[in-house]
Length: 452
Image 1: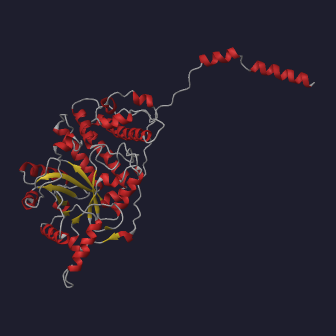
Image 2: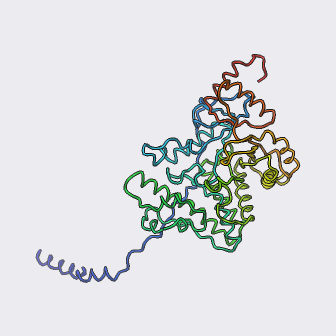
Image 3: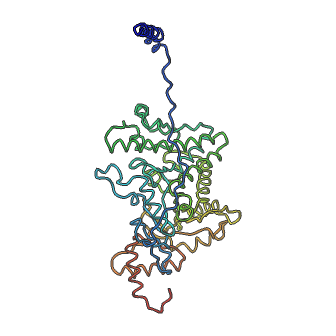
């Protein structure tokens, strides 16, 4: 009985199961499994929360010195809650790893450092204007919210004005080495947009199994994905016209600002810097501003991009616009025209304050030179006669006033008095630690019955 049952099961099994030849034919004839569509990195719609700040580390500058603008260095620790600071992107990233290929801190750690530092002071000037002049380094740490450069918006607008299609940024899946390796030139990678030789060179390398090279390649590809998504949004707006493309680009830039800093921090503590009037070094070597080195772009495209980007950013919070030589009539007129666009006296949209960076002549790199104190009175008169809401305007005179050598405290007090009399902030190249010691020295010398 057992043998008969076993034999029956064997026969049934043989009848149901295909033969080896049938299985082979099935493999040959059946279609291969579908290849999933490449998926871009998902966007994180969450905004960073306002950070916790240790109040015990916060100091308060004497009222007669509350117009000083020192450097945010070190970024955290003792700092003055009632002062506006300047911060440097490279300094905020911190030290490099032992091999120098990457930063020792992750991108998220750097972003949190920015947030904590800014939340503990009145405001911070933050340069966020070009691919390699922003808080995220596109290669040397994991990117958090890479900003699409403003010049990309100008280029996209120019394409629409000229009736040309916007060619997208080529961003294959992160792990597809073959697809990345097939992108031969920076132009193939960036489509219609300004190229980065560095980003192309790193992103198209194979992702080896060895760190840090694998991490640098991955970082670069993630940065390209972020830029590609921004470019895609502008291309999608192209059927609605050039102004719609400018607005779409401005919205993506604003979104990146808020994703990096958080909405409240951006509104209350961050002064974003836009390089509206770059010099040759900044255009050619640093790709700052709204134009592109070597490209002829219609003035209408530049105007549409500037109005959209600066106007959108100003709705989020304060905006600094740099930089104008007040000794040059042409540059004064340019500055007034920008102010009339952003904060007209009548019908000025709600938003933050415009900080105009002014000077009296700088070197070719825009670092050293003469401050604007000699010209500020004349320029204020010109602004008052223009269609500008001066209630929403402040100035920052550059370059910084040097404090060095002997009698540092007396130097500081003298410069502070002079700039206070001109109703100007005093930009300094010193950090909180030295400033605190100078305040202590000045307070110790001050008569007990002196006014604050």
